[in-house]
Image: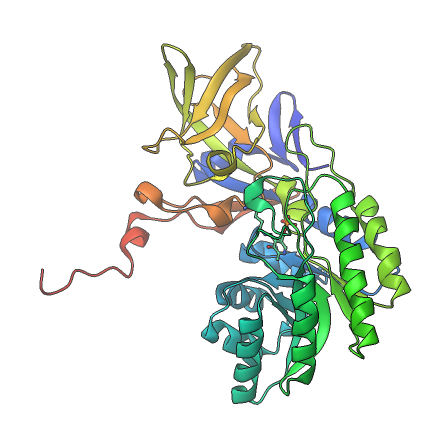
Length: 417
Ligand code: LLP
């Protein structure tokens, strides 16, 4: 459930007509509903009621400062994969002791930054990284809390680009090597074994793969206990899918049921790293139709937003519903909704039945709260679009539209030219 709805044929975000925002802000822009963000976070957190837990919102899904602040205030922790995400998170109000850090390619400066801040846990993805973290902690006079990110080799049955828990994926450490890694970590002077971690993929639409991963991890937890290594927390990563089209992913409580009992039985504190399920359906991309272009084989609707603004359709053939901001009785067309970028892969929707729009009409590209702005780029020197948050009858630009000057900031022409 989200707060984008029609009132007399006009699309609103909470109590604000989207047309009004477009009039003031221009197009394209991302639009987020405060009530939806809040509700999704609280519903997810509540699903795990009764078990010790920390829900760490995954910054990569949406790292706008206003959104991070909202979650920090609701008691969220933060899942990061870079020094930049740590910087943002701290600026937005997360305390370091609520931050978990995953990623296969942590650099020395990033490890140092996280150690100096005193983050909750490093999710370690290789033996080499474990070695480096121990060294850096030694150099800085710190102790690093770690979990080994285990690759449980389960099929999350999602798009291959976003599956991360199969043995052919670059993520985590296989269970056999993980056992070794824990024994090594246990002996290290500047590392403290705190948890066990996995993240098997994203946009997962059934509970089975989570259960399978959990079982593999628990077998390892038991083996470790036999070796005198105690695991205090279980980080199950993120991955719960959402409805973009007709998918029926488990609701947070069904997902929680798959995990909670096992965690409780072993007195493990749970860490969860949800991204998409919290923000995905709390945001949309609003774009204006520039032209209609009837092709020989196909009808094109050309919009002012393109693949640099929303990459998911081009990269994953991802489906995003497209809705008119003003509903008319003009009928339905089948068209490709494309952007202004110089690539044939630049589309927001392909062969889609959609409202029969004309130039100047506004369209809402739905489910664009996750992996949307964060994956946008300046390709073709296009300006990054603003982000707007609505709360009730108010709205505020929470990130300005870039200006041409922003495009060349930091560039210089060398004197030898
Ligand atoms: N934790 C880790 C270690 C992750 O790598 C991810 C996502 C998450 C948590 C959050 O997963 P979520 O709950 O959002 O599924 N760009 C792709 C998605 C990539 C996901 C990467 N990792 C997309 O647009 O579908």
